[in-house]
Each structure stands twice: as C-alpha cells, then as structure tokens.
Image (tube, rainbow, N blue to C red):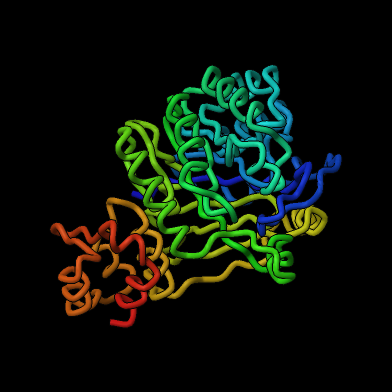
Length: 377
C-alpha cells in the first residue's frame, strides 16, 4: 500500500514582502492565469502519482489568503476529484491585516478546516521592527475571528529579534495562552542571505539577538508552553491534543508530497524511486511551462538511496517520535552506525526505544551536530 500523499499549493503573491523573508514571493498583482495553471498542474501530478489517499492540502506562500474563496474552492474541488480528499486537513496561511470575516467564512464553507495565522507578535514595536502590516490589536482580533470560524487554528510567533527581552516574550506568550489557540509555531529570527535584514546587518544594523540569547528565549518558550499543556511534538511546534499539523508531519516523517505553484517543492515515490521536484520560480515561467508541457516542473531529480535516507534522518529527528531505524536501513541500504548511536545516547543527545530513534531535548538543541555525527558514522 502506498503512503498517503500531501498536496502543497504555493500562492506567491504578497501585499508586502517582509524584510526577513527569503521565500519565493512577489509583490501582489492581478493574475488570471495562475489558478488555471495550478489546476492543470494538479492533473499532471495525478497521472504521475496514480490513485493515492490524501492526508492534507496546504495553501502556503506568499500570502494565499489573497486568494478568493472561489479560487480556494476550485483547488479543493480539483484535489477531491483527482484523488479524493474527504475528511483531510485543509489549511491556509493568512496574515492578520487581511482579516475578512466574509471571505474566511466562505473559505470554511469551501472546505478549509485549519488556519495558520502569521501573528508573529502582539506588540506594536516588535511588529514595526519586523516590517509587518498589522498591529497588536489587529493580531488579537484576527486570532479571535479565526478561532470562531475554523475547527483548528495555529498561530506563528517570531522570537530572537534585536532588543527582545524575556518580558517581551512573556507578553506574547500570555496573550497566546489566554486565547486558547490549539497550535503554536515558534520561529527563531534568522538572517537569511539576500533579505533586507541581511543587507541591514551588513551595514552594521543589528536585527537578531546573539545565539546564547536566542537559546535562552527558546528555552523560555518551551518551558512556558509545555507547562501550559502543549505537546512539544517538533522542534518549533507545540500542539494540544488532536491539533498537530498533519501536513507538516508528512514532511517530517518522509512521506510523499506534491508541490504546485511557482517555486513549490515536492517529493514523490513512484516505481520504487524517490523524486525531488521544484517548480519554475516566477509566475510567468510557471504558467508558460504548464501551457507548453502540462507541468510547472523546472527540475525533477531522482534521489539516491543515500540522499533519501539523509533527508529522512534530518527531518525525522526534528519530531518527538523520531525515526524508524528499520525504515532508514530499508531506504539507505545499510544501518546507522551502532557505535555513533551508542556514543550519542550515552552523552544524552539521543534515545532509543526498540525500532525508534529520537532526539532528546539536549539533542534537539544541537540537532545539526547530532545528525552530522550519525551520518559520518
């Protein structure tokens, strides 16, 4: 039986590009050609994948909340027609300042059952620093509305911005906990090459705290949220029972997912082979490619067993459940080094329970180093 399949739709347009963002995004514009191209691309991927059970549909970006309810509904209907998507997680990323009760209720009527809200902070000074288009009051209002409409809601929180204190962080955490939002994603502010923040830091303008301060803030996040009953099921993610992200778990568990829309990535297993796909980056190139070839694919590379196994390890150790050692061995064609595993277990970075290998809290804090040692054998 084939693994379940996740579907990712990338809507690349944003009203404003955040200074820390290095995603494949473009300034908002009217575009009547992108949705038909996405729908045609889905048809291509159905032919490639064959019949599969769908685990999730995720609208990301960019800002997919700029899509109309009709556009959202058209994509959901297409996935349902092509594969069958009853009773699956259907999620959309949204910004607070684009809050629109009429559209959001229409999204729900179209089948959307989870919203991921880019709150980032509830403090005006932090939001201004981060280049966001909303203020704290708008963030709270949008979160309340989302919780009223959707069965599951996730709120994003950014920490580690220059000047942030534990008191600042506690203010944001207190508001999130008071809202009773069932899922919280926390992201350390990192300075990505080519972003406005990277250029500012190049001019000597500090935008992120140092590594030690960021680690302290992360520990504060973990302590507060787990103390409030949230399950720290992945390095950056906390959930109440029944609200883990099924779509992101597909990535972390090494399942198959297709990506449609400009710049979308995918991983698909067919004929016993694992493929890594990337769609054309610009909307124009993507639309032209679909028109000319039936697909938006720019690259479709077959992964070696070692490459697939490495991805499975890197992603799988991010989650509390960890990886299956037998699945790793099946993918790679060899087992992980018992010597390295024993060394990392004795040092408190890994734990092993039967077939499962997972990272401890200490291991999650230095996960890159842990996985590097495992892979070097």
